Length: 439
Image 1: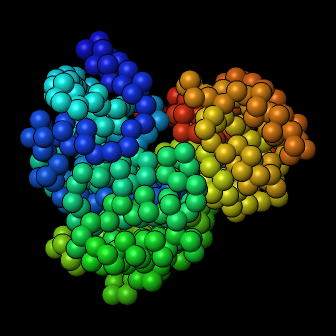
Image 2 (image 1 turned 45 degrees about the vertical axis):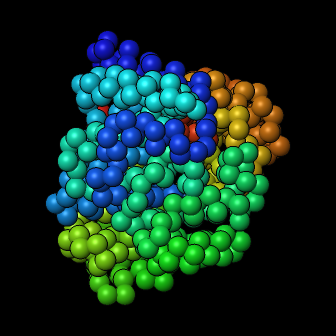
C-alpha cells in the first residue's frame, strides 16, 4: 500500500471519532455535492440482522455470472478497507482510493460548513465514496448492504429495484429499539413505495410490522420461503449439495461452497430476489447463471473451514442468534467431538447470550483480546465462560490458536474461532489466508 493511500485511509479512519449518527441529511448533502451518483444506479438493497452479507455475496456472484458488471458494497471489512467496495468481485484498488478519498473529502468538508452541516461519519463517507466509484465505473447493477438498521442508515438514500430483508432479531438495542417490533420497523425502513420487497423467515413479532410497512407503501411483499424451496442433499467440510426449485423454475442440483443449514435460507432469499429482478425488472438471469453463481460464491470469515486436521472453523458470529447458527453447524459437522472455542468480542455485544447458545458444544475456551478499542477484556470473557464448567485460558490470539490446535489434535476434537469479525480478520492474517479472499 502506497504512502498516499495510507495517508488517505488514516484521514478516513479518523472519522470513526464521529461515532454512529442516524439520519440521512448529512449523507444527502454530501451526495448532492458529488452530483448525486446514487441516482443513476440500479440497486438491490439488503438489510437484516444475520445473513445479509451472505445474501449479498450470492446475489453479486449470480448477477456477475449473468454477464452484468456488478458493484458490491458490504461492511465491515475483515482485513483491508478495499474489501468493502468491489466491482466484478475485485476489491477497489489502492490507486482508486488514493484518487477518490481526497475528492470525496473535499466535498464532505464543504458540506459540513453549510448552515446546519455536520461532519460525516466513517460509514457515511465510505457509502458516498462507493456510490461515486460505481457511477464512475459504469456498473450495471449494485448490491448494497445496509450498515446498521435501515430506515436511517446512510445507504437508505436510494430507490432500489428491489429491497431484501433477511430477518430480524435483537441487535444494537441502544440504537434500533429494545424489542423486535421496533427493530423490524427500522429494518423495514428500506421498503420503498411501489418497489417489491423479498423477506426471509421472520419472527412472529416482526412479520406484522414488515407486512404493514409494505402495505402502506404499496410494495409487493414476497416471502422467500413461499416461492423458493432449497433442500440439502448432503454436506461436508467442502460445502453442501442442494436442490433448488421455485414456483416456475427448476435450478436442479448444485454444490454451494458455503456450509450450514442457515445458508439454505439465505440461498432461497437470494433466488427469490433474483427472480423478481428477472420477471419484474427485465434482467436476464438464466437458471444456469444462478447455478454457476451459487457454486462459486465466496464469503470469508463466515463458517469458513480453515483446516481439516484438526477441523478448524472460523466464524464472525457475535450475537446469540449467530452463535445458535454456529452451534448448529458444529453439531452437523463435528458431532460427538469435543470443541475448543477461541473467543474475542466487542464490549457492546451480548456475551452471556452468545456463550449460552454455544454452551452445549464447548469443552475448552481461550479468551482473547481484539485489535480495537471496543474490545471486551479477555478477563470478562473468561469469567463468564467459566460458568460453562470447562477450563478457560486468557491468551493472545496467536498463542490461543496454537494451543487450541494442539488440544484438538490430542483429543480428536475441533476448534471454533468466533465472537467478532475483528477476530476473524486477525486470524485470517495470521493464517496467511489473505490472498484472493474474494476474487
